[in-house]
Amino acid sequence: MNDEGYMDVALDLAKSVQGQTSPNPPVGAVIVKDGSIVGIGAHLQAGSAHAEVHALEMAGDKAYNASIYVTLEPCSHYGKTPPCADAIIKSGIKRVIIATVDRNPKVAGKGIEKLQKANITVDTGVGNEKAEELYGPFFHYAASQTPYVTLKSATSLDGKTATITGESKWITGEKARLDVHHYRHENDAILVGVNTVIADDPKLTTRLPNGGRNPLRIILDTHLRTPQEAKMVTDGEAETWIFVANGVSQDKINFFTTNTDARVIQLETETIEIDPVLRYLGREGIMTLYVEGGSGVNGSFLNAKVVQQVITYMAPKLIGGEDAPTSFAGSGIESLKEALQLSIKSVEMLGDDIKIISVPKEV
Ligand code: NDP
Ligand code: ZN
Image (cartoon, rainbow, N blue to C red; front, side):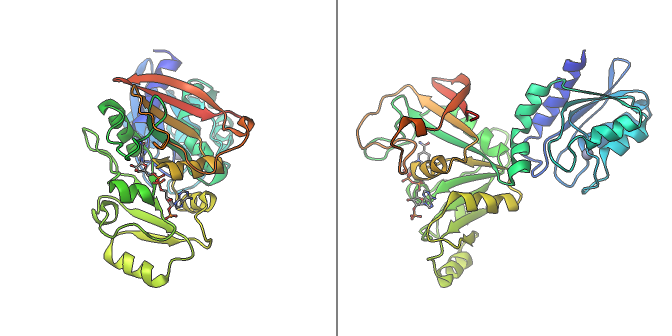
């Protein structure tokens, strides 16, 4: 195998732990000596050993004069664990191949510098494109201290999310719905508006064939209208936080939290603005947020221009009806120039449906 091949193994290891490492990035490492893999590792969880440490432990003495492939620049600072750059130097590794430099200011080139000072050959750029994609959320969070937002919608070909009577189950097919559960598993938190909670009483848990990790569940609910018996606040399957505005009385909040499992977070404003919600989540270490609507909430995220990735599932159905809802409500715009410009990254068939991933164009 060549450098790209070994890096692909490391990237696969990193991808396999995506969603379970926040607020740390998913990292994979592979140690190769004389053409054989002698150690592999992934960072499983914040607070536990880094990928390089696992791989070095597995390699033992074989790490001497070997090469290590790492998806992200090895750390050089003392966090919850000692610096990986030091462990690599100590092991006698002679070459380090890095897919992407860590843009987190705590590392940003310092790991590479440390290795080079110890006369280790450092090569960067192998597998860079794939790594940039993998670390998009991590770099976004490091730079903004707010979560990377993925907004999902499921519509008919004419862009409707329900019929005129509000029937929406199910517009898309089984494969598209299963795909949504992968995103729930990979994201730290999932967010909906209170109308969706009242209309559908969803659980918003991850139900993949092999289970999966449940995201933190978040409801935007100005007046605390969430029913006390809603599944999200009673099922105990995952934490649920409800953002409310300043008009809700402390008594009402106390009564609600006594009778449910939810945490109620009161903002200082009369309405719920998206930016403070994202900053709050960022402070709580939420690196990735999956927005599942409905259209009111989607419209607010669009207006606030805080979406990093849009995922659209479209079913080959035409629903029609002037009053049938679409994915985005909100105040709308007057001129096409103000529209959020996206680039389509991929188009894929999932059963009979189309999945489109798009990202905002850089301006
Ligand atoms: P939402 O679920 O988007 O909830 C909107 C409500 O959330 C608002 O009316 C408001 O109520 C509250 N809210 C609080 N803060 C904000 C904010 N900053 N921005 C927007 N809303 C805020 O409601 P919709 O009625 O638009 O959509 C619900 C319908 O959508 C349901 O019927 C559901 O089945 C469907 N749906 C369809 C999906 C699909 O993919 N096809 C996905 C999800 C839902 P208040 O003022 O009381 O706080
Ligand atoms: Zn490290």
